[in-house]
Length: 234
Image (cartoon, helix red, strand yellow):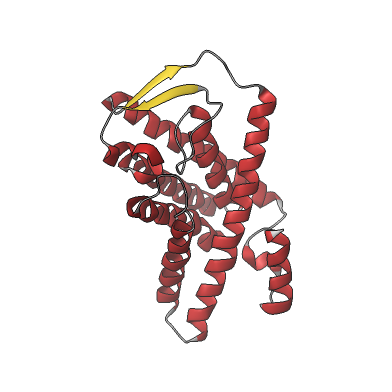
């Protein structure tokens, strides 16, 4: 419903093409999306490896593995969440905030920075009601939003952002980490925080800790490297 609402908003209120919000049905979008999934998955595996190597996370197998249908349904749910949040916070909010600044004759670089920060801050604040949310988790989620917004700024396409978001959420939860205060219900592993909350994020999960920042930083580096490589090949 949100996507349809944004479609009518674009057409009748903003007087622009819905495609300007970045939700494009084209081959490039699919390729960006798949690369985003790979990068997001690698980011979570990296923070898990660091947590396990430092002893800040305890990882052990569980006796029961989720049914494929359960995993698929959860992945589909995360896909919908990623599409909705990326379309709204990155495609819609960033675009309109940016246009608001440029309409007031603000320098382009300043407009980009302000739109990036404000749309991402609103993304962080939108998670205030999550279990165990804190000022720190809001700040760290703001960084998440900025990292997912940058590929959209560079490509005007949400494919990479949606893939990153989907894989980040899905992999954390399915592996057994707490994601944005939501405890994993049918994980592949049992993961316990044995290190300081500042690193692990405590009950909120990695998105409120340094481990999450490491994963997010890797996502940004890998996404920019991919876009740079793609640019050189064109």
